Image 1 (cartoon, rainbow, N blue to C red):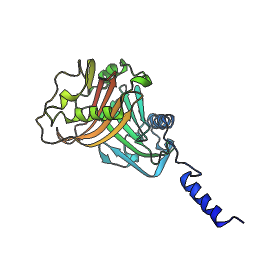
Image 2 (tube, rainbow, N blue to C red):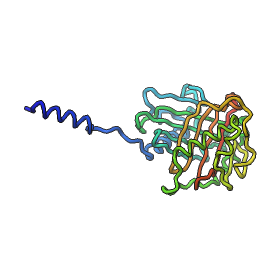
Image 3 (cartoon, helix red, strand yellow):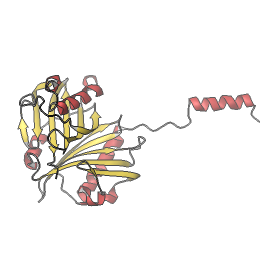
Image 4 (cartoon, rainbow, N blue to C red):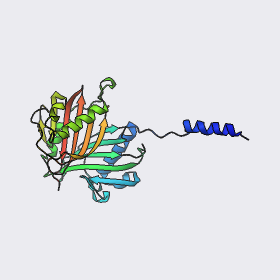
Length: 264
């Protein structure tokens, strides 16, 4: 029989060093889940996804029935790329379908609960198609396919704080006259807004003028890729569902991508 003092010591030891530790969110797990999302989109079969019991599907900033959303239809994906945020346990996937009868440019954040990448807690999608702002899927695909998204060396990866500030400053340009000047623009930066290419990024920028800040901001920050994606509601221009992705290389903004839906 264990003496009371020994039992107390064991209880204290277990409290300090739990026998089971919470799982860590892994990059591989996030990217694997993103891959299953792409496979489900290609097949149009929601059953290919392992969804959590209290799963949420959101499309163009509205909570929706996944069975009636974009994932219920199969699309040929002509270009895709995913990034991973192990701190938020979330991923961002951009995909383009330019060869079908209804083209799409899509940005999707996938979120996991309790660091469990085996189950998807939320799929949050911004989906632009014909008629949306500056939309031309073939041109967008052409510009983005030419970009370099090689992983950054560990020593030169930007901090999460810098990436988030870059994303916020970009979205603040419409309400803050000084925001554009706070962004570290690269001289070779490229900005793809819908299908419009602007080089360098730092030209033709807003400097305030709107009273409505862009809200509903949701972030996926990937330091290995030097990127931040922000899904939001573009209130400065009229409640538009929107995705803004920014990549920072060597401390300077290298790429900016925007997907904006006209709010229909």
